[in-house]
Image (cartoon, rainbow, N blue to C red; front, side, top):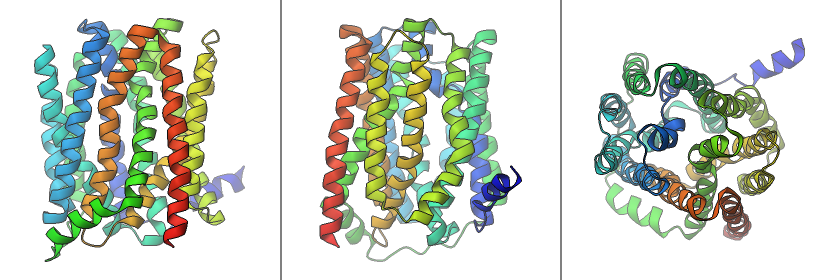
Length: 400
């Protein structure tokens, strides 16, 4: 047992102080974003919107994310990641607080687009910051540490959120979301020093041409989009499925989500360290992740046993531990110098676009044909992702 614990601690060695501060800030921020996993339930059960309306509002989440990712990537290449991160998270805090006072359909559509445009400009900047604060050989582990912090926050957040909703309702969550965003960025500003930013004089010519002409990278972006189409079902149709099929309350749904984040918190860093030692290719790992994502939704077709929810979440969790750190690693490695912000913007946009279509299509299918039809459709996204991943691997080999 002592040896296992020692090996676990060793997986964290060699990471910079700034990466540890970024992880702490990510933990504080994510622990506060309690309302996100329950947003579809809030819209359907508290504000009494139809499935179709919930789908449109959740699609606005993705539209704002696309805009924010693009703007954040462009500005990161122009003025540096630090200013973007500070402004984004600070303003997001106040906007989350205000979101609770918007209850009309069109008001929520506009408000969520605005919130996510500001909030998701943070993400390309965060990814680019890893190039500054982390050594190249530690990049994947640095990202894994930040993901661990995010998931630890999610272990605390949704579980506590489910209890708060059960006892006090949704309104308190918006205050917690906003205040923790503000606290997180104040910590970042005080603890992490801004690095001098030197703008590439040829940036405007390099970034657009390189990012948008890289055909292999577009195949990769398509894979990420399909992964997002699957993954975002966890936060839209699945919480509703828990209630509809198995009559679970918010607290019980939070406990199932806790399984996902608990496994990641305990096992992801040692798992990443093991993979790094084996020197497995990122493209191969992305393929394995797509297979696991697909299987996790196929097993949900068995809707008579409540334990299938745990089986499904465990399978997709392993896929998440393999897939997401190495999709990010591939994007960073592929990015051309001076165009990092645009490459990372396209990466985050892939998931943001998926956030537009995944909830809308999923909820419409559920409304018209039921949950099992949606699980088959989601698995079909996975089959497409598997085919694209094989193509990506072949293109990377041929490029070399």
